[in-house]
Image (cartoon, rainbow, N blue to C red; front, side):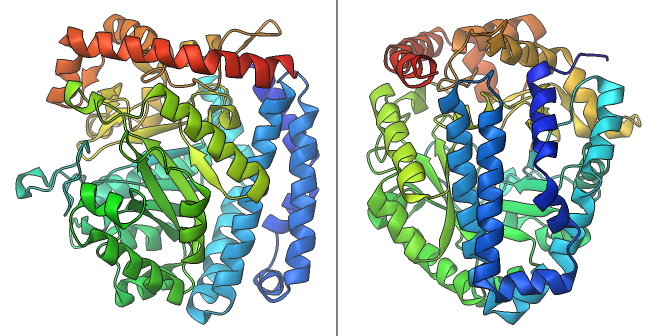
Length: 496
């Protein structure tokens, strides 16, 4: 199992710890101190500026990475600090949410964060590389909508779900052995999940030391459910839209947009922090993101924005994928909104420089993640439908989730990530094209053919044999390189 931790990752950890005095004081704060942060905008301003200064200093201290790569990380961190301050402002006037955060959630999370270093060291001693930072979990496939190009289903026959006992064990193991306190819940529609009489709310209640980001279509969030979110305090819903009313209802169904707006109003009335999840397709990429769109949802209370460019799951969906030119325009608008206006906007593809490239398959550089679906399949990424193992099978034989990280499939992706990065002081890759599945399909196909992971569904199995799909993906990648290759050279490497 032994692998050497890359020197860049080790240095990143040491720099972070050298600047960690303020963070250390914060994670050991008492509920009374946390209450003071809620009450004093001036104190929060000082703390925010301190973290902003520290993050810039840490980012620019790593001279081995291009300066603009490090500035991208600083800009998104600065935007995150702004969003966190806005979340406290939203919660401070709502007693239920405020009490949940200050007296239960934050103290529990801070205690867990204080143990991360120890747990990371144990994991690295066993596996030879840092643990993943978080995971994405879809406990159920069932959804009450049927959106074009989505992998989830709305028919009653598709209620595939993981038992609550398994979901609970996954979160416990991730927290105890990885040290991670952040969990992403996806679906299907997570608010429809139910197993042994337990729901997503029961999971959040059992794991108060975790903060959950939950992707939801928002149609089920009425006033009563919004109050439940506030009582728990450790779930932030990311509500899916496609743009404004016309774009959202066109893909999600008539009347969905109106329900989404009501859900946001209900959450805002309780001081619950929430954000927006945007699926960019060829039909709406010209407004995702845009100043008008981001400002509109921010005024409704949204604190952050996640962008998912539609991933093809076969030839039928290729026509929905944003074009290479649309993707470049999205990149340019996103960074302008982050740098100039300090909005927190994350795009898994266009934001590759913020994470040093692809972070799927656990990423032996550290900070990575993996995905577990409703059938227990453990895949490198939500958008990579080939499994390195199955959690049900692993647990049945007394194993642990970390085993998947050293499966042939995951290790092959980790090697690609390492090669598509800093090598002997030179960049061999291009972090504005970070994704092996979408941006480098030829490399991904070679890995799939070599390691032969299990396809998670019929569509992903067919894609391996579909010559027309393969040629379309390779052609798309060539178009991306023509546009993003010069961008990487001019903005990132030459400026360095």
